[in-house]
Image (cartoon, rainbow, N blue to C red; front, side):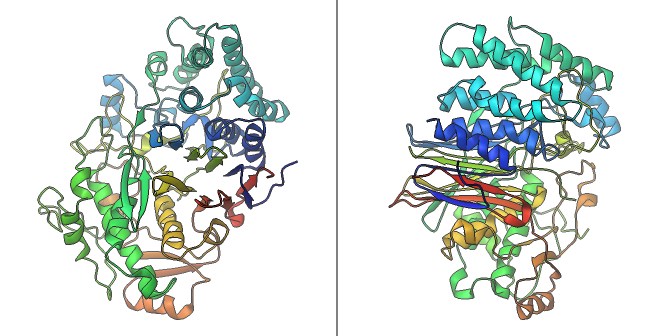
Amino acid sequence: MTEMGWNAVSKTGAVAAGGARSVAAGIDILERGGNAADSAAATILALQITDHGACCIGGEVPVLIYDSRSKQVKSISGMGRAPRSQDAIDWYMKNGIPGDRDIKMAPVPSVVDLCTTLLQQYGTISFEEAVAATIVLLDEGDAPWHPNLAKTLRRMVESEQQTGGSREEKIQAASDRFYGRGGAVGDVADEIEAFWIERGGFLRREDLAAHESLIEETVSVNYRGYQVHKCGTWTQGPYLCQALRLLEGFDLPGMGQFSADYFHVLVEALKLAMADRDTYYGDPNFVDVPMQALLSDAYTDVRRTLIDMMEASLEARPGDPLATKALLEGEAAFRPVIGGTTTCVVADRWGNMVSATPSANVAPGHEAGAAGVTYGNRLRSLNTTPGHPNCIAARKRPRITLTPTLVLKNDRPIVAISVAGGDHQDQAALNLLVDHIDFGMMPAEAVIAPRFATSSHQDSFDPNPNRQETFGEPGSMLISDAVDVAAREDLARRGHQVDAVSKAIAVPVMLHVDPESGLISAAGDPATQRHAAGLPD
């Protein structure tokens, strides 16, 4: 039996994720000869049970994958959309996007189609094989929705088994059973729709049938010889690329790891990048995000001048990338609870690598209906601000915080990171990337190293049309109490509102592949109940 812990090494395959039995599901697929995509699909499906609340089958899961055949990194948009109905959109614009278990806050379920797309396009196994461990977990469980979801998944397997043709066509039949597409049996989709209607939701079967998991180009930058890849601006991910570009102009090793200068420059770069995130990002199929300008040398250079090494910024300061100006004219600088998410990274013996961030923010006591499909709150990551790039619209993806990371060096995959923690996700990812790239830390060191985060930005889960009212705590810095007291006092003198804590800041997992030996190292912060396992060599 493969040993389970919080860190692992292997030359043939490894998984790091949330629940131990989900990691076991992914490792089992690798042991049976499946690849990283197969393993990731099995892990993600099982996480919907072991980590339910942090994620669910009605939630979402953005994915980055390096495919060793094409030697490319792609983003798979495991994100559901807002309702197709314009009447629904008009209601949101008038009444706001509700919370408190109201099913109107839920997007179209995307996890099932994400997993079937992953299997079809990059995997080698059947849906039946990928979902087997999940069905076992459901059969052993005692939540009221467990038997209903088990029945739903078995019906999908039934459709796969009864369909002729290729492996991909069979998997499509399983997905179509859930989403009610084409001539598929419509029982599952009918049950999901009936639950939505019963609970007063706007989503309908047509929304299910229209759902697709887009395979997209990533946003990437070169940071000190490493190519860092993120999903597009339907996530917050590209702001990590902006922060890395700003940090290129500073000698972090010369400052010293975990020094006051080190923490200061990292958090100031993040504040500038998040101000641009909050001003410009949205679903790129609906808005023209000036990503090339945001990452350009000229814009990066002018923005970097705003970082004062002796004083913490207490303002939100978006720039003007199209005019290459450090500050956006007419946009006055202003001073104005982490949600549920889990994690998954996988690497295999063939050089494939996956990073995924499943989520849903499922509130306790949610019901699921006859299909067993619980739901999350991700439409609250949109807003109702007319003209804003992230304003709700029919079939629009929310600009979510979920943000997996893949890193290449010399065109080979070397690092995968996934973090749970809402607006803290890419802040923690930046901590881990700098720990590795600038200071040589491996996963087992990086995931337990001191971290920090700030709330000096807009709240990604507050749909308030007055965006200034969503701004968190100006100048805040949550920091590990393992950081030297003298460094913390220095930060406070610069104006940071320092709050030293013993608890973990965000919830990371990280995987590294040594390009010379092929040794895979995987780890998750043990303080956050992450698990990792590797195949025996």
